[in-house]
Amino acid sequence: MSSTPLPHGSRLNEHDDLAESGGLLSAAMELPAWAVSLGVHLGLLLMLASMTRITFIQEDPPVVSQMEDLENDTFKFDVTVVDQIGSDSEINQISPSQAAATKAGQNPEKEQEKQLEEELLTVSVPITEPLDMPREDDLVSEVEQSGSRTEHTGGVPGSMDRLTFELGSSLKERKTLAIWLFDASNSLNERREDIASRFENVYRQLGQFNLDGERGLKTAVASYGKSLDILTEEPVDDVSQVISAVRNIKPDSSGEEKVFSAVMAVAQKWKSFRKPGTRNNRNIMIFIVTDERGDDFAMLEETIHFLKRYGIKVFCVGNAAVFGREKGYLTWTYSDGSTEDLPVDQGPETVAPERLQLAFWGSDGRDLEFMSASFGPYALTRLCAETGGLYLITDETRIRFDPAAMRLYQPDYRPIREYQNDLQTNRAKAALVAAADATRVSRVPTPQLRFQADTDTVLRQQTTEAQKPAADLDYKLSQMLMVLEEGAKDREKLTTPRWRASFDLAMGRALAMRVRALGYNTVLAEMKASPKSFEKKGSNMWELVPSRNLDAGPQVKKLAKSAVEYLTRVVDEHPGTPWAMLAERELGTPLGWEWKEGNMVIAGQNMGANGKKAIQLAEEAKKKREMRRKLQAKERPKL
Image (cartoon, rainbow, N blue to C red):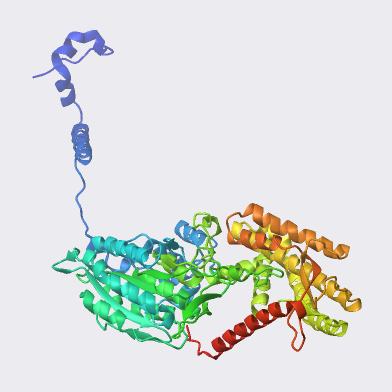
């Protein structure tokens, strides 16, 4: 079939009827074969592309690897590269993670260890396995304080009630091992018996805590003095065995009390009862019963770290520390019924004594030696506080203060090295401790106040002899004041009421003592140069008594004014405290001296009308001397 060609020069739009009748198919059929093929393939590609995009959006990618795939050498760190990163490398920049670690601390291992120790304070089960002994550098790290410190219980009955409560709380949590550690010294015989007699009632109350088909409470008993004595080789759950062990404690007469060594030893012996994750995992609580502070302070820090690693709490049933001094007094009764106040180590409540040991000239201050600040001794109290336990005061000193009023005056329970660092950075603290130590080492003499004056010659001899120790005392006081005055430059940097009260009291008392010593020497010199005449018949003695008439030069009066200012500030700023009581006692005695005539017994002389009284006085003096002689002859126990 032939087709009629278009006339030469004609256009498609001129033949619309032909275009409509032929259609697109006719036009496509006239295209070359390669063009048709190209169009078909392009269409297929577009369809495939559309299908691929839809599938990617609607479906999740399959997991093609497992964790085991990472365990190959490809992902191991090159140690040589890591070691080269840092200040010694050629690369000056470090990664963000290393920068963060550097900012947190220069020693990541110590930072991690510190974080672990902080977590132990709040986690009920602080360890998963028994740990090795702490390293040397652990022992010098600062210990975070935790728990309470001192509690007043009203004697042994109150203490036992409190310990029963603590044991009950522990048993509600899990089975518990109670380790009773008794001071074996003779001075504690009565307290040990008192506690033993109360054990049956305590353990009856705790008998309800039976866990896992067995008794939840087991008990171990030991005693200590110079050495440790284990009284129950294995912990027991029979209260009669506990009572028998306590009553069979052998007294230790060595005079030594190595309490911290004993605590460490029993903790190491029975630490196997602390096995988290096992059926035998128990809380461990150590109960120290004593009336002294202990001697082996060098073990304190090591003991604290070990106990905290195992979560072992320590409670102490003990005495209040004597205020600002190492030596307290315990009334000892001899077999013949006589009594004597014997010195024992009961203080201080701080690392070092912070109270001057000065006599009260012109008044009796012996009662103030039996003073407590309502705190326990430093080392034992800190041991309890650091482990989350309590120091329970059962036997107060004769003069004590309201614990509520003393809350602002708590001692510094930080590690000893921190206390020593403070002394190096604050001159007021250093001066106070140095002055207190000087009065502890070198006894301050009590002046002679009564002088025989039956003749002027005898009076001059006695005043001359009395001036010798007074001159030595004045020199020591002048040296002490030089130290304290240097420390006064940092007095305003003292931020706690306790340090301010202690420093002001020390300055006030040292100044007052110096004023009295200077005045004492002055009136003795005047009497020696020109002896006074008696106004009353029969007088044969001159006695120095305190006077508000300060007959001295302007320099002494200046010292007196400064002393009154310091002491008055203590009374005004620290009412109801031992510092205020000591300042009031000092202010209550005038700083000057005056002579008062009287009579005294003089061997070989007839006292006339006063003879009967003189004989009575002589007999009383003889009895006192005899009593002192008998006491000196007695064999004093080592407490």
